Length: 461
Image 1: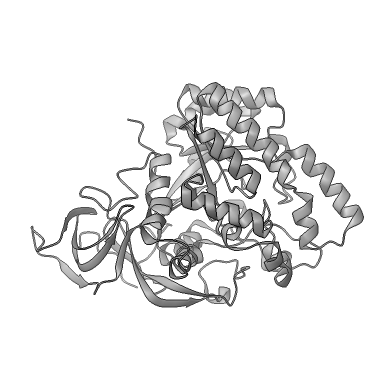
Image 2: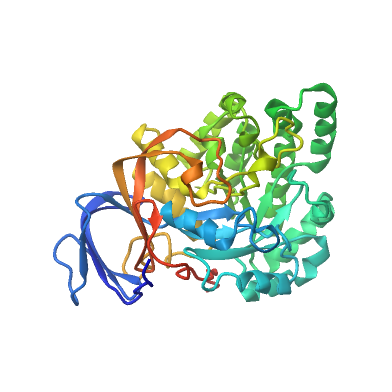
């Protein structure tokens, strides 16, 4: 592996350039880390290394607004280097790191400590969330000055067995209102894990007493209406305070409808879905057991279909993998209450969605609208990222819709070498990934040392 040549220029010839509006044949010039020109004919300017894409599709780099790359106190599960390697080979050029971990990002010092890990260790750009709770409410504006991409509010514990997690969740509606009001005051972006913690506690106790400790017990311990209650509260408070609200990993049909109705009156509401909830339902998980334990859980076929409809019509704006690897030996447990939730997702994120295109359930322009432009706009990275236009960062992914991907987690880049999608075949694959004009991954492998990635922060203009 040779050191990256950051000064190299490329001409990407004969590309099928995908935008949210269309697919058109064009040539694209990459100069000094940016897109210099998109032309149907010859490219102007100085000479450059030419790559003939032969009609392969050229997309903006995928943006994942929801990852847990671990590192520091949990680096045995994943770290910034292995996590962004997954991103790079998967065509993901920017990720947004959630604030829970060891340590949690509760203070500006925590934020700066985590930010320092990015330099020289990453393949993709990383944006950082701060945790928002009653204890640090009056200090949250400091994170805005440091470049936080958003402020994560948890209204429930996630089931990840972190002893002090419950100390920083927000259950009381008055405290939740004060957080929304505070963040709205400096126009920050809220991201919320929306479930009712008292309902989860009640139903978890019931399921432990009355059911076998299997994947169905986990699903039923977190009922849909626990999400509905918390989503309704968040939507109402966004409207009352004017806060920008992003609802993370929506799982249920009722929540989709609540969001759909609220967005008709409030343009500051956005939401995301995780690939597992868009592609799987409860019956798919019986064969994979604890490998399919996510928080919040995968639900019924009716919920999955409602999520698909919402994703297509724009009720659900974007998608986040919730990439959260666990230690394999702990994850693989017949007792679902012992197995931690979460799993790797970055490497197969784009292939899984390209397969939806190949199956006729999604189009490439809609994919670009949801996975590239929408997260860039929501989190104020646009037009620097999320688009193929002159002046934008040359964050790009080349896609071969004839290439197939057999999901083999043991061969993946993540430290968590398992997945609920093991042995599935996806049609469509990323074959080249560029970050600011640098070719960082090709045909499933990173081709440069770590260090290409930078800290990504929103524009406050």
